[in-house]
Image (cartoon, rainbow, N blue to C red; front, side):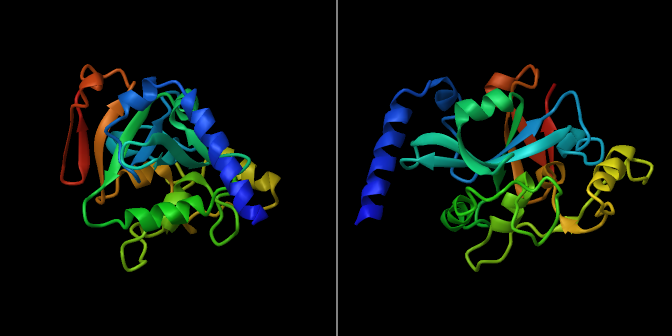
Length: 234
């Protein structure tokens, strides 16, 4: 009974917070569905984008999962794996940290949306995996999706791929050599895993919207996609 009371109090507090939430982003992204993927485009690039390319070769370094609280038109949140732990973030707070976005949607009939979202929500509170290792209790951003997006049979929608820490020359970059050396480890090049850029290129994902990338038709959601690759009109 005490646990039930705590849950009721938590729900009431959440509803109160939502009542005061700015509505700009809620309205801009009103077309988003449960389970859509928000890919952050880092225009400056970083150690992640230097070794992994996103769709259309865009420098994608993060991905979050859309979750609506209150049904199809409920308030928008993002389930994301960031330091220090997997969390549920309001769409407004997510945009403050990730201002340039591609919106991806898993093609119809592939994803068990309710089941996948339940699995993602069960990860909330788990520590962030800044070593990007498979098989441990910590979670990094694209791993949240890769491990928990399943079909109606419970099978993974996205298979793990060999991890890449190398540049276009095929050499592991100095950044990642030093990073793992500081942890007394070898670079886990080729270990099974995922990354947000590669995830954005999967055939199962359609890019349906762009936000704040500086394209002429950004506000018109004018995005074409064919043969597993998006065409972002400049």
